[in-house]
Length: 101
Image (tube, rainbow, N blue to C red; front, side):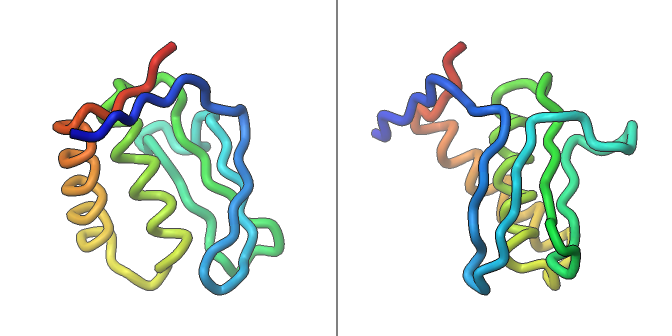
């Protein structure tokens, strides 16, 4: 069993993809009302990811994985990315990964 409890999530996180493109991940509402997360194209000078901060814990985990996967493999379809992120978040959640407030 995993012992994955995340205690604090920073307001923003910076990371680099395998192609060395730096992204900024922000816990802010995306500009579209129907989106829980949004990943900018790596073609932008300063790409970012926005994730709706008030999501339920398992959904927040899934959306975070989904948007980071988009950053790494922007050419993959939404269907492929959602299948992967949903599967990984389910596995992690079933084994105890949680965000504590």
